[in-house]
Amino acid sequence: MKPKIEKLNTLGSRYAEAMAMCGLADDLLDPDLLDARPFRFAEGEHLCSRGDPATCLWIVVEGSVAIREDGHTLFVRRRNEVVGEQHLVGNGYQRIYDLAANETSVEVLVVDKAKIEQHPEAGKIWRNIAKIISIKLRSASRRTASLSQQLADDTRILHAYTNEYALSRRMQAGAGQQTGYAVDRAVIWFSDVVNFSGYTTRTPPERIADIVQRFFNAQTQPIQQHGGHIDKFIGDGLMAFWVLGTADGSARSICTSALRAAEEAVAAVAGITIGKQALGLRIGLHAGYVLSGDFGSATRHQFTLIGPEVNKAARLEQAHQEDVMEGGQIGPVRISAELRNALGGIDQKHYGSKFAVRAKNIGTLEFFTS
Image 1 (cartoon, rainbow, N blue to C red):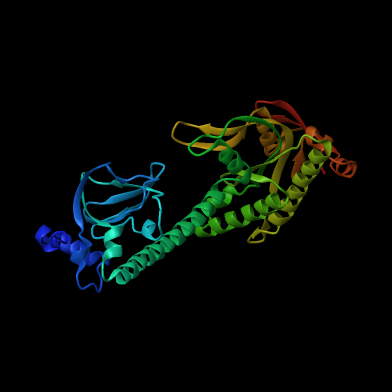
Image 2 (image 1 turned 45 degrees about the vertical axis):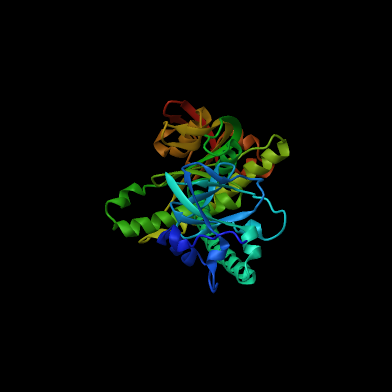
């Protein structure tokens, strides 16, 4: 005698609707032969766990079911959706995810794999399962494409606000952690456009914004092309740096690259004019030991370099003609003795004009220009 199968309609219209809407029973003459059984789960209870044998699938009638891996929710299946069907395709398949009730009360219909195989229209049911899987894969592909685009957008934004060196340090620190502090030997660059502030209140804002972008582009391109990192923009000024290697040859090469970037930046900015007036650029370059890492408050911080050597590079850029105690006309690129000593003989000879100026909080500051 065959076991009595209770009709879905006798269980309630919600169950019949779930069976019809989920797609599992499409084109079936008698879906009641699947003998779907209702179950309730409280929030957090597992429908199945990773490693369990795959012997059934579920149709969500009320609430939602979370698909989880290592405690992380990958997907959420909601009302009138099928869950757990992918692992039925094959003998001896096991669950590779945890399925858990995702709301206070979750109600599902359980359909056993054995009932599917015994159904006179089993071929149609497996076709319907394949269609359900295909729809989910298409949805997952769209979601993956969307996440990939979001990741690409986030990466572009991240690179716009963070230099490569700071980014690599942050990646080493791990997610959610501030960058650790380190002492680096570095070339520090400070630059500023000569007398530009006087234009800002007398020129239309859109015009000023365009000029600012042009003269920052004129500096960032040679800095990056010569291996430097932009630390920050400070009004119409810029701070950048190069991390020096431990080998003498490497340090000389990096110092030379920083100097070439400075020379190219000065030439490029000189090609930008406001009316007939060409812009000028001052650059201070110094080599020394700095403390690097994330600095700031508990809620907002930024990767940067700090220390006396950073201040010295800033004072090199800020030196004005009226501050000169020894020397003639100051050139646009000012290099410290420490940086000059790391250069090759030709560059040392070219930057042979020695100056001494009065510098704020430092006193007498010596440097060289061409």
